[in-house]
Amino acid sequence: MGGPGCRGSGATFQCQRCAVAGVQGCCRAGSKSGRSLRICLFPLDIMSSGEDQQSQALAKPTFSEVQASALVESVFGLKVFKIQPLPSYDDQNFHVCISRTKDTTDGPTEYVLKISNTKSSKTPDLIEVQSHIIMFLRAAGFPTASVCRTKGDNITSLMSVDSGSEIKNYLVRLLTYLPGRPIAEIPISPQLLYEIGRLAAKLDKTLEKFHHPKLSSLHRENFIWNLKNVPLLEKYLYALGQNRNREIVKQIIQLFKDEVMSKLSHFRECINHGDLNDHNILIESSKSAFGDAVYQVSGILDFDDMSYGYYVFELAITIMYMMIESKNPIQVGGHVLAGFESIIPLTTVERSALFLLVCSRFCQSLVMAAYSCQLHPENEEYLMITAKTGWKHLQQMFDMGQKTVEEIWFETAKSYKSGIPCD
Image 1 (cartoon, rainbow, N blue to C red):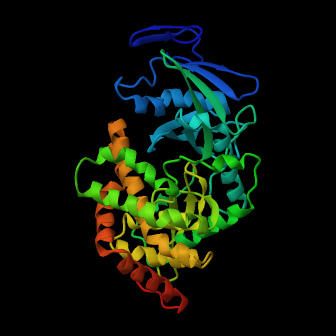
Image 2: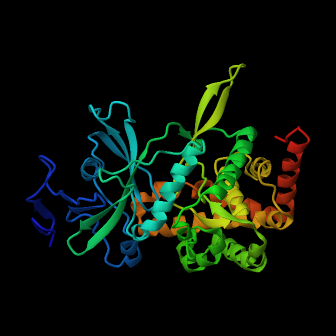
Image 3: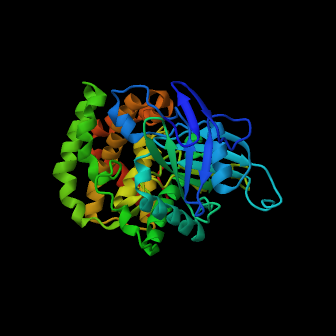
Protein backbone atom coordinates (compact mmCIF):
# COMPACT_ATOMS: atom_id res chain seq x y z
CA MET A 1 0.00 0.00 0.00
CA GLY A 2 1.19 3.52 -0.71
CA GLY A 3 4.06 4.63 -2.90
CA PRO A 4 7.83 4.40 -2.58
CA GLY A 5 9.12 5.55 0.77
CA CYS A 6 5.67 5.50 2.33
CA ARG A 7 3.98 3.21 4.71
CA GLY A 8 0.38 3.18 5.79
CA SER A 9 -2.41 1.04 7.12
CA GLY A 10 -6.14 1.68 7.21
CA ALA A 11 -6.95 5.32 7.93
CA THR A 12 -3.49 6.19 9.25
CA PHE A 13 -0.58 7.16 7.06
CA GLN A 14 2.93 8.52 7.37
CA CYS A 15 5.19 9.65 4.54
CA GLN A 16 8.91 9.19 5.20
CA ARG A 17 9.98 11.53 2.38
CA CYS A 18 7.56 14.38 2.97
CA ALA A 19 8.90 17.44 1.18
CA VAL A 20 6.54 19.84 2.88
CA ALA A 21 7.94 20.78 6.27
CA GLY A 22 5.68 19.75 9.11
CA VAL A 23 3.07 18.12 6.90
CA GLN A 24 2.42 14.40 6.89
CA GLY A 25 0.86 12.52 4.03
CA CYS A 26 2.41 14.36 1.08
CA CYS A 27 5.37 12.91 -0.79
CA ARG A 28 6.66 14.64 -3.90
CA ALA A 29 9.14 13.54 -6.53
CA GLY A 30 9.42 15.60 -9.71
CA SER A 31 10.97 14.64 -13.04
CA LYS A 32 13.66 16.51 -14.97
CA SER A 33 11.22 17.41 -17.70
CA GLY A 34 8.74 18.87 -15.20
CA ARG A 35 5.94 16.98 -16.93
CA SER A 36 5.13 14.53 -14.19
CA LEU A 37 4.80 14.52 -10.44
CA ARG A 38 4.22 11.57 -8.16
CA ILE A 39 2.44 12.22 -4.91
CA CYS A 40 1.53 9.78 -2.17
CA LEU A 41 -1.70 10.94 -0.61
CA PHE A 42 -3.15 7.76 0.88
CA PRO A 43 -6.03 7.43 1.53
CA LEU A 44 -6.92 10.29 -0.82
CA ASP A 45 -9.77 9.92 -3.30
CA ILE A 46 -11.15 6.62 -2.06
CA MET A 47 -14.88 6.70 -2.79
CA SER A 48 -17.29 6.13 0.08
CA SER A 49 -19.39 3.53 -1.71
CA GLY A 50 -18.08 0.47 -3.49
CA GLU A 51 -21.38 0.33 -5.38
CA ASP A 52 -20.77 3.64 -7.10
CA GLN A 53 -18.77 2.33 -10.05
CA GLN A 54 -19.53 5.29 -12.30
CA SER A 55 -18.37 7.75 -9.65
CA GLN A 56 -15.13 5.84 -9.24
CA ALA A 57 -14.59 5.89 -12.99
CA LEU A 58 -14.95 9.64 -13.05
CA ALA A 59 -12.87 10.13 -9.90
CA LYS A 60 -13.36 13.80 -9.20
CA PRO A 61 -10.18 14.94 -7.42
CA THR A 62 -10.45 15.49 -3.67
CA PHE A 63 -7.24 17.28 -2.78
CA SER A 64 -6.98 19.16 0.48
CA GLU A 65 -5.82 22.77 0.57
CA VAL A 66 -2.46 21.66 2.00
CA GLN A 67 -1.96 19.17 -0.79
CA ALA A 68 -2.97 21.71 -3.44
CA SER A 69 -0.52 24.24 -1.99
CA ALA A 70 2.27 21.69 -2.19
CA LEU A 71 1.32 21.06 -5.80
CA VAL A 72 1.58 24.74 -6.77
CA GLU A 73 4.99 25.06 -5.16
CA SER A 74 6.49 21.87 -6.56
CA VAL A 75 5.10 22.09 -10.12
CA PHE A 76 5.01 25.83 -10.74
CA GLY A 77 7.62 27.08 -8.26
CA LEU A 78 5.28 29.56 -6.56
CA LYS A 79 5.04 30.01 -2.80
CA VAL A 80 1.41 29.91 -1.68
CA PHE A 81 0.23 32.56 0.76
CA LYS A 82 -3.46 31.61 0.77
CA ILE A 83 -5.56 28.96 -0.97
CA GLN A 84 -9.26 28.10 -0.98
CA PRO A 85 -11.49 25.81 -3.05
CA LEU A 86 -13.68 27.12 -5.87
CA PRO A 87 -16.97 25.58 -7.06
CA SER A 88 -16.54 23.03 -9.83
CA TYR A 89 -18.58 20.41 -11.67
CA ASP A 90 -16.40 17.32 -11.98
CA ASP A 91 -12.87 18.72 -11.71
CA GLN A 92 -11.32 20.52 -8.75
CA ASN A 93 -10.37 24.21 -8.71
CA PHE A 94 -8.58 26.36 -6.14
CA HIS A 95 -8.16 30.12 -5.82
CA VAL A 96 -4.47 30.60 -5.09
CA CYS A 97 -2.76 33.71 -3.70
CA ILE A 98 1.02 33.66 -3.85
CA SER A 99 3.66 35.42 -1.80
CA ARG A 100 5.85 37.95 -3.55
CA THR A 101 9.48 36.99 -4.03
CA LYS A 102 12.38 38.67 -5.80
CA ASP A 103 11.54 36.55 -8.84
CA THR A 104 7.81 37.35 -8.88
CA THR A 105 7.75 41.08 -8.17
CA ASP A 106 6.02 42.02 -11.43
CA GLY A 107 3.74 39.06 -12.10
CA PRO A 108 0.19 38.35 -10.91
CA THR A 109 -0.44 37.32 -7.33
CA GLU A 110 -3.73 35.45 -7.85
CA TYR A 111 -4.22 32.22 -9.80
CA VAL A 112 -6.63 29.33 -10.33
CA LEU A 113 -5.25 25.82 -9.91
CA LYS A 114 -7.20 23.39 -12.10
CA ILE A 115 -6.98 19.65 -11.36
CA SER A 116 -8.76 17.60 -14.03
CA ASN A 117 -10.66 14.44 -13.14
CA THR A 118 -9.13 11.12 -14.12
CA LYS A 119 -11.36 10.73 -17.19
CA SER A 120 -10.40 14.12 -18.63
CA SER A 121 -6.78 13.51 -17.70
CA LYS A 122 -6.70 10.63 -20.17
CA THR A 123 -7.07 13.17 -23.01
CA PRO A 124 -3.96 15.36 -22.66
CA ASP A 125 -4.12 16.43 -26.32
CA LEU A 126 -7.59 17.88 -25.77
CA ILE A 127 -6.52 19.80 -22.68
CA GLU A 128 -3.44 21.08 -24.50
CA VAL A 129 -5.60 22.40 -27.35
CA GLN A 130 -8.01 24.04 -24.88
CA SER A 131 -5.09 25.75 -23.15
CA HIS A 132 -3.70 27.04 -26.45
CA ILE A 133 -7.16 28.35 -27.37
CA ILE A 134 -7.26 30.32 -24.12
CA MET A 135 -3.89 31.86 -25.01
CA PHE A 136 -4.95 32.49 -28.62
CA LEU A 137 -8.13 34.30 -27.56
CA ARG A 138 -6.26 36.41 -25.04
CA ALA A 139 -3.82 37.47 -27.76
CA ALA A 140 -6.85 38.36 -29.90
CA GLY A 141 -8.16 40.72 -27.22
CA PHE A 142 -10.64 38.56 -25.34
CA PRO A 143 -10.62 38.72 -21.51
CA THR A 144 -9.38 35.18 -20.94
CA ALA A 145 -6.82 34.02 -18.39
CA SER A 146 -3.11 33.60 -18.96
CA VAL A 147 -1.82 30.02 -18.83
CA CYS A 148 1.16 29.62 -16.52
CA ARG A 149 4.07 27.38 -17.38
CA THR A 150 5.52 24.74 -15.10
CA LYS A 151 9.09 24.77 -13.85
CA GLY A 152 9.82 22.48 -16.79
CA ASP A 153 8.29 25.08 -19.19
CA ASN A 154 5.14 23.08 -19.99
CA ILE A 155 1.52 24.23 -19.82
CA THR A 156 0.29 21.07 -18.06
CA SER A 157 1.73 18.59 -15.61
CA LEU A 158 0.61 14.97 -15.31
CA MET A 159 0.49 13.96 -11.69
CA SER A 160 0.19 10.40 -10.39
CA VAL A 161 -1.53 9.74 -7.09
CA ASP A 162 -1.28 6.51 -5.13
CA SER A 163 -4.65 6.09 -3.44
CA GLY A 164 -3.61 2.84 -1.80
CA SER A 165 -5.50 0.54 -4.16
CA GLU A 166 -4.45 2.02 -7.50
CA ILE A 167 -2.49 4.79 -9.21
CA LYS A 168 -4.63 7.62 -10.55
CA ASN A 169 -3.44 10.32 -12.93
CA TYR A 170 -4.51 13.96 -12.87
CA LEU A 171 -3.58 16.75 -15.27
CA VAL A 172 -2.77 19.98 -13.49
CA ARG A 173 -2.83 23.54 -14.86
CA LEU A 174 -2.41 26.99 -13.37
CA LEU A 175 -4.24 30.00 -14.84
CA THR A 176 -4.25 33.63 -13.78
CA TYR A 177 -7.26 34.68 -11.72
CA LEU A 178 -9.67 36.98 -13.55
CA PRO A 179 -11.40 39.90 -11.77
CA GLY A 180 -15.11 40.55 -11.77
CA ARG A 181 -18.43 39.11 -10.67
CA PRO A 182 -20.41 36.41 -12.45
CA ILE A 183 -23.34 37.90 -14.33
CA ALA A 184 -25.57 35.57 -12.31
CA GLU A 185 -25.20 38.11 -9.48
CA ILE A 186 -26.65 41.13 -11.31
CA PRO A 187 -29.92 41.99 -13.07
CA ILE A 188 -29.12 41.53 -16.77
CA SER A 189 -30.34 44.35 -18.99
CA PRO A 190 -31.40 43.86 -22.62
CA GLN A 191 -28.29 45.74 -23.71
CA LEU A 192 -26.01 43.40 -21.76
CA LEU A 193 -27.82 40.39 -23.23
CA TYR A 194 -27.20 41.85 -26.68
CA GLU A 195 -23.51 42.29 -25.88
CA ILE A 196 -23.24 38.71 -24.61
CA GLY A 197 -24.79 37.51 -27.86
CA ARG A 198 -22.14 39.49 -29.76
CA LEU A 199 -19.45 38.04 -27.53
CA ALA A 200 -20.53 34.46 -28.26
CA ALA A 201 -20.51 35.09 -32.01
CA LYS A 202 -17.17 36.93 -31.98
CA LEU A 203 -15.65 34.07 -29.98
CA ASP A 204 -16.64 31.46 -32.56
CA LYS A 205 -15.75 33.75 -35.46
CA THR A 206 -12.28 34.39 -34.07
CA LEU A 207 -11.65 30.67 -33.56
CA GLU A 208 -12.02 30.15 -37.31
CA LYS A 209 -8.40 31.36 -37.47
CA PHE A 210 -7.11 29.03 -34.75
CA HIS A 211 -4.77 26.25 -35.86
CA HIS A 212 -3.07 23.51 -33.88
CA PRO A 213 -1.64 20.11 -34.87
CA LYS A 214 -3.93 18.39 -32.35
CA LEU A 215 -7.08 20.30 -33.27
CA SER A 216 -8.86 17.06 -34.21
CA SER A 217 -9.09 16.25 -30.48
CA LEU A 218 -12.05 18.67 -30.39
CA HIS A 219 -14.11 16.13 -32.34
CA ARG A 220 -15.53 14.59 -29.16
CA GLU A 221 -17.98 12.11 -30.62
CA ASN A 222 -19.73 10.91 -27.46
CA PHE A 223 -19.21 14.02 -25.36
CA ILE A 224 -22.42 14.35 -23.34
CA TRP A 225 -22.35 18.17 -23.38
CA ASN A 226 -22.20 18.53 -27.15
CA LEU A 227 -25.71 19.42 -28.30
CA LYS A 228 -25.68 16.90 -31.12
CA ASN A 229 -25.51 14.17 -28.45
CA VAL A 230 -28.86 14.97 -26.82
CA PRO A 231 -30.13 11.39 -27.50
CA LEU A 232 -27.42 10.10 -25.13
CA LEU A 233 -29.46 11.59 -22.27
CA GLU A 234 -31.83 8.63 -22.44
CA LYS A 235 -29.56 6.43 -20.35
CA TYR A 236 -29.58 9.02 -17.53
CA LEU A 237 -33.33 9.62 -17.37
CA TYR A 238 -33.72 7.31 -14.37
CA ALA A 239 -32.14 10.05 -12.24
CA LEU A 240 -35.29 12.16 -12.68
CA GLY A 241 -37.71 9.65 -11.21
CA GLN A 242 -41.25 9.36 -12.58
CA ASN A 243 -42.78 12.81 -13.02
CA ARG A 244 -43.81 15.41 -15.58
CA ASN A 245 -40.24 16.68 -15.92
CA ARG A 246 -39.15 13.30 -17.17
CA GLU A 247 -42.01 13.17 -19.68
CA ILE A 248 -41.09 16.61 -21.03
CA VAL A 249 -37.46 15.57 -21.45
CA LYS A 250 -38.46 12.37 -23.25
CA GLN A 251 -40.63 14.35 -25.66
CA ILE A 252 -37.86 16.86 -26.36
CA ILE A 253 -35.35 14.08 -27.03
CA GLN A 254 -37.78 12.54 -29.52
CA LEU A 255 -38.39 15.90 -31.20
CA PHE A 256 -34.61 16.37 -31.40
CA LYS A 257 -34.28 13.02 -33.16
CA ASP A 258 -37.13 13.77 -35.55
CA GLU A 259 -36.52 17.45 -36.33
CA VAL A 260 -32.93 18.40 -35.52
CA MET A 261 -30.79 15.39 -36.41
CA SER A 262 -31.74 15.68 -40.08
CA LYS A 263 -30.72 19.35 -40.11
CA LEU A 264 -27.22 18.94 -38.65
CA SER A 265 -25.60 18.61 -42.08
CA HIS A 266 -27.08 22.00 -43.00
CA PHE A 267 -25.66 23.83 -39.97
CA ARG A 268 -22.35 25.71 -40.29
CA GLU A 269 -19.64 24.02 -38.27
CA CYS A 270 -17.25 25.79 -35.91
CA ILE A 271 -15.42 25.43 -32.61
CA ASN A 272 -17.78 26.03 -29.66
CA HIS A 273 -16.89 27.29 -26.21
CA GLY A 274 -19.90 25.21 -25.25
CA ASP A 275 -20.54 26.56 -21.75
CA LEU A 276 -21.13 30.32 -21.79
CA ASN A 277 -23.26 30.18 -18.67
CA ASP A 278 -24.09 32.88 -16.16
CA HIS A 279 -21.21 31.80 -13.90
CA ASN A 280 -18.59 31.58 -16.66
CA ILE A 281 -18.94 35.18 -17.81
CA LEU A 282 -17.54 37.80 -15.44
CA ILE A 283 -18.46 41.47 -15.48
CA GLU A 284 -17.12 44.69 -13.95
CA SER A 285 -19.11 47.88 -13.48
CA SER A 286 -18.30 51.53 -14.03
CA LYS A 287 -20.35 54.70 -13.74
CA SER A 288 -21.92 56.30 -16.79
CA ALA A 289 -22.11 60.06 -17.32
CA PHE A 290 -25.58 59.89 -15.72
CA GLY A 291 -24.34 58.00 -12.66
CA ASP A 292 -25.82 54.66 -13.69
CA ALA A 293 -23.88 51.40 -13.44
CA VAL A 294 -22.50 50.28 -16.80
CA TYR A 295 -21.34 46.68 -17.07
CA GLN A 296 -18.71 45.23 -19.33
CA VAL A 297 -17.38 41.69 -19.64
CA SER A 298 -14.14 41.26 -17.70
CA GLY A 299 -13.59 37.53 -17.96
CA ILE A 300 -14.53 34.38 -19.86
CA LEU A 301 -14.03 31.20 -17.86
CA ASP A 302 -14.03 27.42 -18.26
CA PHE A 303 -13.05 26.16 -21.70
CA ASP A 304 -13.27 22.51 -20.64
CA ASP A 305 -16.44 21.84 -22.66
CA MET A 306 -14.97 23.03 -25.95
CA SER A 307 -15.68 20.84 -28.96
CA TYR A 308 -16.54 21.04 -32.62
CA GLY A 309 -20.16 22.03 -33.03
CA TYR A 310 -22.12 24.67 -34.90
CA TYR A 311 -22.71 28.40 -34.64
CA VAL A 312 -26.35 27.82 -33.73
CA PHE A 313 -25.25 25.52 -30.88
CA GLU A 314 -23.26 28.33 -29.25
CA LEU A 315 -26.21 30.68 -29.56
CA ALA A 316 -28.70 28.16 -28.12
CA ILE A 317 -26.44 27.37 -25.18
CA THR A 318 -25.91 31.07 -24.44
CA ILE A 319 -29.64 31.85 -24.61
CA MET A 320 -30.48 28.98 -22.28
CA TYR A 321 -28.02 30.04 -19.59
CA MET A 322 -28.96 33.73 -19.83
CA MET A 323 -32.58 32.70 -19.15
CA ILE A 324 -31.68 31.09 -15.82
CA GLU A 325 -31.62 34.19 -13.61
CA SER A 326 -33.91 36.41 -15.70
CA LYS A 327 -37.25 37.69 -14.45
CA ASN A 328 -38.50 37.65 -18.06
CA PRO A 329 -36.83 34.48 -19.37
CA ILE A 330 -38.83 34.13 -22.59
CA GLN A 331 -37.78 37.62 -23.74
CA VAL A 332 -34.08 36.84 -23.24
CA GLY A 333 -33.65 34.89 -26.47
CA GLY A 334 -34.47 37.81 -28.74
CA HIS A 335 -31.83 40.12 -27.27
CA VAL A 336 -29.10 37.47 -27.35
CA LEU A 337 -30.14 36.49 -30.89
CA ALA A 338 -29.91 40.11 -32.05
CA GLY A 339 -26.39 40.45 -30.66
CA PHE A 340 -25.28 37.16 -32.16
CA GLU A 341 -26.75 37.95 -35.58
CA SER A 342 -25.00 41.33 -35.66
CA ILE A 343 -21.84 39.23 -36.17
CA ILE A 344 -23.14 35.93 -37.61
CA PRO A 345 -26.65 36.01 -39.12
CA LEU A 346 -28.33 32.60 -38.89
CA THR A 347 -29.57 30.75 -41.92
CA THR A 348 -33.25 29.84 -42.22
CA VAL A 349 -32.51 26.22 -41.29
CA GLU A 350 -30.49 27.27 -38.23
CA ARG A 351 -33.25 29.62 -37.06
CA SER A 352 -35.85 26.87 -37.42
CA ALA A 353 -33.92 24.67 -34.97
CA LEU A 354 -33.15 27.31 -32.33
CA PHE A 355 -36.17 26.70 -30.09
CA LEU A 356 -35.58 22.94 -29.85
CA LEU A 357 -31.86 23.46 -29.30
CA VAL A 358 -32.50 25.77 -26.36
CA CYS A 359 -34.96 23.25 -24.89
CA SER A 360 -32.43 20.49 -25.49
CA ARG A 361 -29.71 22.36 -23.62
CA PHE A 362 -32.08 22.77 -20.69
CA CYS A 363 -32.56 19.01 -20.78
CA GLN A 364 -28.82 18.33 -20.85
CA SER A 365 -28.15 20.61 -17.91
CA LEU A 366 -31.08 19.44 -15.79
CA VAL A 367 -30.73 15.71 -16.42
CA MET A 368 -26.96 15.67 -15.89
CA ALA A 369 -27.28 17.75 -12.73
CA ALA A 370 -29.75 15.24 -11.28
CA TYR A 371 -27.47 12.37 -12.29
CA SER A 372 -24.34 14.04 -10.88
CA CYS A 373 -26.10 14.76 -7.59
CA GLN A 374 -26.54 11.02 -7.12
CA LEU A 375 -22.80 10.55 -7.64
CA HIS A 376 -21.65 13.58 -5.66
CA PRO A 377 -24.35 14.59 -3.13
CA GLU A 378 -21.77 16.70 -1.27
CA ASN A 379 -21.65 19.00 -4.34
CA GLU A 380 -25.43 19.37 -4.66
CA GLU A 381 -25.60 23.12 -4.05
CA TYR A 382 -23.32 23.85 -7.03
CA LEU A 383 -24.68 21.12 -9.28
CA MET A 384 -28.29 22.22 -8.87
CA ILE A 385 -27.78 25.93 -9.64
CA THR A 386 -29.56 25.59 -12.98
CA ALA A 387 -32.34 23.41 -11.58
CA LYS A 388 -33.57 26.13 -9.19
CA THR A 389 -35.30 27.93 -12.04
CA GLY A 390 -34.44 25.70 -15.01
CA TRP A 391 -37.35 23.30 -14.76
CA LYS A 392 -39.81 26.18 -14.47
CA HIS A 393 -38.37 27.89 -17.56
CA LEU A 394 -38.31 24.67 -19.59
CA GLN A 395 -41.92 23.91 -18.69
CA GLN A 396 -42.95 27.44 -19.64
CA MET A 397 -41.23 27.19 -23.04
CA PHE A 398 -42.68 23.77 -23.68
CA ASP A 399 -46.21 24.84 -22.75
CA MET A 400 -46.05 28.02 -24.86
CA GLY A 401 -44.81 26.07 -27.86
CA GLN A 402 -42.26 26.74 -30.57
CA LYS A 403 -44.30 29.13 -32.71
CA THR A 404 -45.20 31.50 -29.85
CA VAL A 405 -41.69 31.62 -28.41
CA GLU A 406 -40.09 32.10 -31.83
CA GLU A 407 -42.41 35.03 -32.58
CA ILE A 408 -41.19 36.77 -29.42
CA TRP A 409 -37.53 36.05 -30.16
CA PHE A 410 -37.60 36.96 -33.83
CA GLU A 411 -39.66 40.15 -33.36
CA THR A 412 -37.32 41.31 -30.59
CA ALA A 413 -34.26 40.61 -32.76
CA LYS A 414 -35.90 42.41 -35.69
CA SER A 415 -36.54 45.48 -33.54
CA TYR A 416 -32.80 46.04 -33.16
CA LYS A 417 -32.49 46.54 -36.92
CA SER A 418 -35.02 49.37 -36.72
CA GLY A 419 -32.96 51.01 -34.00
CA ILE A 420 -35.70 50.68 -31.35
CA PRO A 421 -35.07 47.41 -29.49
CA CYS A 422 -37.89 45.87 -27.47
CA ASP A 423 -37.48 45.72 -23.69
